[in-house]
Length: 312
Image 1: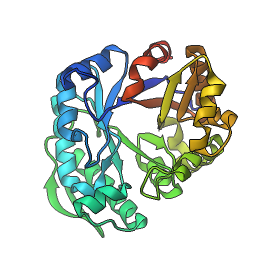
Image 2: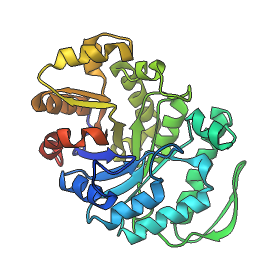
Image 3: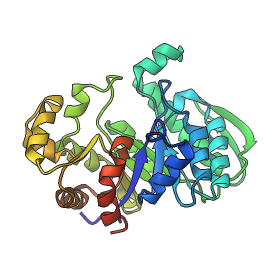
Image 4: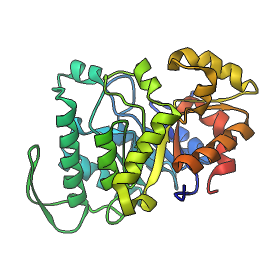
């Protein structure tokens, strides 16, 4: 595969690490060599993404900030665009725009926000992308969609990154990945979460073969854009160990297939530092994936891998 970009790595956090403050956590993540810090966007026990992104950016000098991913249903795109543009200005251009159609059923049930069918949510997200890109650009926006109507609105402030901060859109289904292939700067290849919960079915959709299929959809729809797209993955588990096969065997029940197949799941890293580095290089060759975001509990153990591969 010709689509080879240099590696970079991020961390996803819901809270500060250990007994550190949030500002100290952001500085620590930056010091370990990570390129970005992200938050999920749910109503459970976590920091809210927007203020936490701004606080992390204010405490650091190079760290990019974003969400994996903002649920489009929770805010109108005019509000989201203004908040993200403001953070981009105040951080001197360090925002990544992670946007999704929403998936976690419990968020909707507990908040009372209506959970529309997946097709409606995805269509609404697609319109939101158009509205936000228009507001980030120069000139006023007129948009008349099925879900949003904007009339003569000039988006301010304008973001530092032009024509807009990079959009990170990911998913596990063909329609969302097709939209991402057309609209996103960064495409996240994910297991399908159509059930609305993290389930064995989602784990089973993370196989190497499923990833082949999903990357194929993106390449086909992207066409000439393919070479300009950065491929991203959120890492489910990253374990540094001398017992590679034994550790994979312990995880096999979760996935519903054997240890050898677990070792091929691109969202799972198991092995020594050398083995993990070799896996990531092979996966970049196969799928073009070069931008990984790890869970916070793995960021210290994986830091040597990050420092070894970043920029290569």
